[in-house]
Image 1 (cartoon, rainbow, N blue to C red):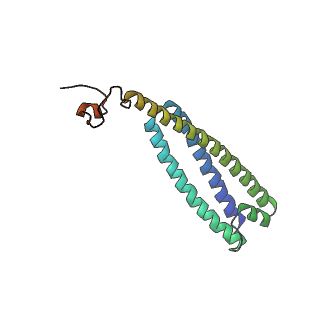
Image 2: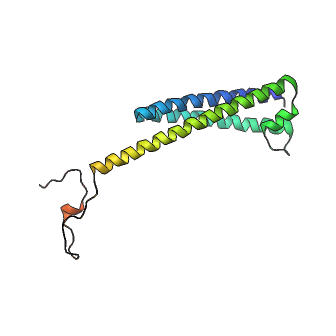
Image 3: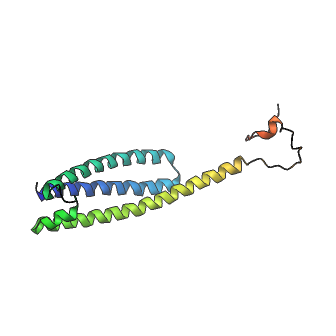
Amino acid sequence: MSAKQLIELLENHVKLHKGLLELANKKTEVLKKGDTEALNEIVKEEQKYIAAIGRVEQERIRVVHAMIGETDEPTLTACILQTEGTERAMLEKLQDDLSAVLSELKNVNQLNEQLAKQSLQFVHVMLNMLMPQPKEVNYRKPNVAPSSYEGGSSLFDSKA
């Protein structure tokens, strides 16, 4: 196997990760707005990218094994050490590009995780405000069961 195949795979890898990064940035804006429908669409798109990245990664591992043999660990660094000239420079550049995109993607995903947690906390607070837990304010005999309207937690207290 030649380094050219690996270069093509890595270029595709970088392209797919950049697309995933673009979706992650869109997700940040959607999380800020609270648009759940758009968030669902972005998650579906992300799944497509993740599946494609998985396929490219499997192919990359196959090509790396063909280049360096089955005995070594299938890393890009091991391939770079076996190449020379422009192919080596190209592989090093692609390795740097991929590392930069992955680092930025990690940062954006951490931000999105924090935004999602804050949104969930807000929802829980609002639910607790709308449906507060019943409190014992009156004395009741210990062996007497509460009446049916006291035990339920309803948004409206009404009697028919």
